[in-house]
Amino acid sequence: MKSAKTRIAIAATTAVLALAALSGCAGNAGGSTTCGAYLNMSSSNQTKAVTKMVEAHGDSTSNGNITLTKLSVSAYCRTVGSNSSTIDGVYSG
Image (cartoon, rainbow, N blue to C red; front, side):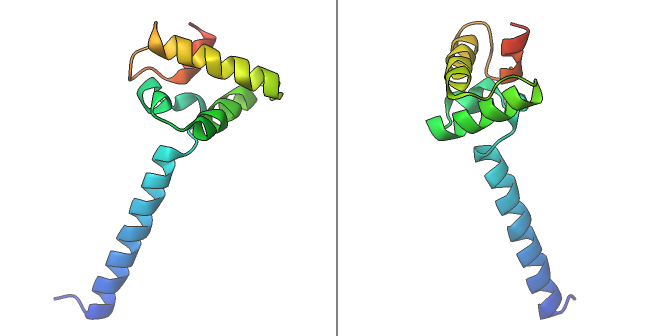
C-alpha cells in the first residue's frame, strides 16, 4: 500500500496536470484550434487564437488584420468548415 505522502503527491500531480489540460482548452492553440472550440470561445480567446495563428503565418498582427481574420475564421467555420476543422483552414479555404 502506498504511503499517505505518496498518495498526496499523486493527487497533487494529477490535479496540476488536469488544470493544465483544462487551461489549454480555453486558451490558445492558435491555428490548430477546431472550429467547434473557436465558435464557443469568448471574443478575447478568439482574438488570442487568431493572433497566434496569424503570427505563425508571418502576417501582420495589426488590430485591423486580426479583426478581419476573426471575421474570416467565423465565416469559414460556419460555412465550409466543420466542428472538427481547424481554423488554420481559413488560409487554404
